Amino acid sequence: MTANPTVFHAVAAIAKDLERDGYQKLSERDAWELRAGGKYYVDRNGTSLIAFAVGDKYAAGNGAAIVAGHIDALTAKLKPIPKLRNKAGYLQLGVAPYAGALSDTWWDRDLGIGGRVLVKEHGKIVSKLVKLDWPIAKIPTLAPHFGAAALGPFNRETQMVPIIGLDNTDLAAPSAATPDAEWKASPLGGEGAFAATQPERLVKAIASELGITDYSTLVNWELELFDVQPATTGGLDREFIFAGRIDDKLCSWAAVQALLNANASLASSSQIRIVALFDDEEVGSLLRQGARGNFLPSIMERIVEEFAETKTKNALARTYANSFLVSSDVIHAVNPNFLNAYLENHSPRLNIGPAISADSNAHMTTDAVSTAILQRCVDADIGTRKQDPKLQVFQIRNDSRSGGTVGPMLSAATGIRAIDCGIPQLSMHSIRATTGSQDPGLGVFAFQSFLERFEEVDREFK
Image (cartoon, rainbow, N blue to C red; front, side, top):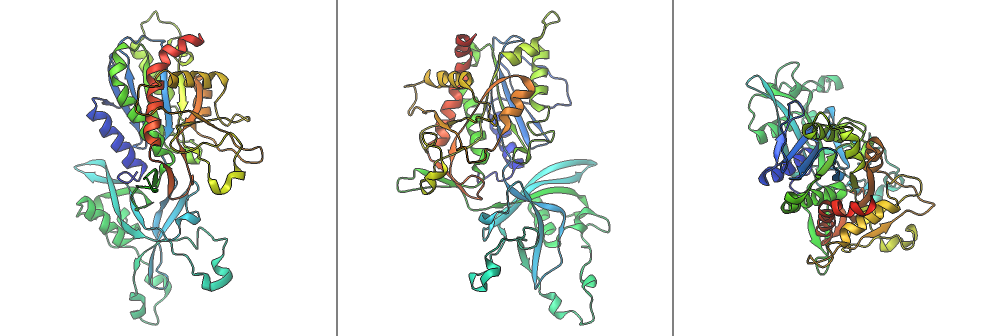
């Protein structure tokens, strides 16, 4: 969460972890040649990723054990033309909130800039990752001495504009100069170049970081702000983790580690094990790299087709029916200062284990059958690890509003049985949140038990 602050960095880091463990990268554009016992991954747009391992005994129509989450997080994205006129000697940056970003927790934070840069090299357009991880931007509060003006509410378009530097050259400008005379395109890259539409000093900083000397080779970029404060442990006994972007990189990390840890049992498996990490969950999952897109169904269809013989009937439909999905998004941990906001006996604690999320209005996929299946998987490994995860339960009060995540949309599109179960955290959607120091590992244990035990547990439910 510190080293990989943007969705682009997170996907790239996960891909490296997978490749180190023998996973082969596939492209959706190419024909595939899969084999039983093989391990593969596919990314889409550089912002979502699906990894899958095929059991040595897999046959078309057999089920899949799937853990799915999202890898995007609340942020502030640079606008297409983020260059702004100087105000009172300040250089400012035009940004737009992604989901619930630019909330009150973004005031006075040290913000870096990172993301994806498209560069023209040798006649090709290549994607490069950039991370300026020192404090560059700041959204300053107004001191309380100014009275009512400092109390809000605040306008996110006009009053939460980051400052990124100083420029007092306007003080030396001729008195006859007009505001429009001060506003001119940057000469970087030449007239009409992408670089000419961006803040000149930012272009130079990014080009320097990437070793680019010809600004005209900058084709475009997708950049965002992030809190540069590193993740750390805290509490008297270091029982907390304080970090940014916990939602939902925490569950994404745990799911991938569980998949890697389950390699040893792949030889005896007749199923597929899948970890699917999506982009755009925080804004509705409506894009092609989101959970409402065809990414997961498409990958599962291609896997089944690769192993199906001509006489195999309805293999994909049977695969869906024999599969199970754990939708792994973070869950609200109980906050001791706001106990009245929680439903009694449905308030997850930290360092206990993942929480199953239920909802009477179908915002979650959880039901009695899916709860029993996951509980049986986790119980099957009790006593075999240093600490056993204990599944907790969360449900909102009747007078509260429920959020949603990727589970219902994936389950509805495929017919796959599903449950919502994630790692608890405090301060969801804050720029800096809290989880337990044991919770990442407990999440890995629970997800690994599911991936390895689902095949045998599912026989009890046929």
